[in-house]
Length: 228
Image (cartoon, rainbow, N blue to C red; front, side, top):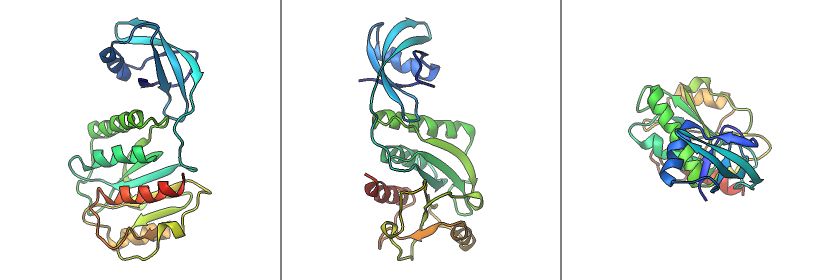
């Protein structure tokens, strides 16, 4: 069944402009049933009650149980990557169940910053990935901040070569989880020191050196597997 993200689940809903094109391509008609979700975990069936130029009105139906989420929200904090690598990580991280993606700038990041257009593209990718994976949650993709400003309120981990600590020995689900993955050039000693002082535990991803776009997915896969 076709899924559309709306701002909120109310008895009558207008389809946001960003979703109208999608409905038009599907050639839906009044009376057709679709599913709607708010990106925060709520999902329901809805009936197309009216179609008009540039929009549609939906009538709320029965609620639907969405795909299971992790016991606590997971934030992926990731250094900026060049090309489409960041888009690929955003898509896969959404499928793996992250609740938030915090972009980071660092000394050895592949790019120094990203503009509003690329940030908005990443948000669209997260939305499309949540539809495809049948999640009722769409991760927030937050504008870059310096890694030295990163904080965590619960269990927090940094993927760091050279350590022998294993994620599964430290992970608990009693508070939101944050994981950090670095750029191709790695972290500076000062950045690692800051993260450790901020409560981030360095953990190993195994004996091999992983690419910057592979490491966060390996880390997230290990986390998600413990929370099912």
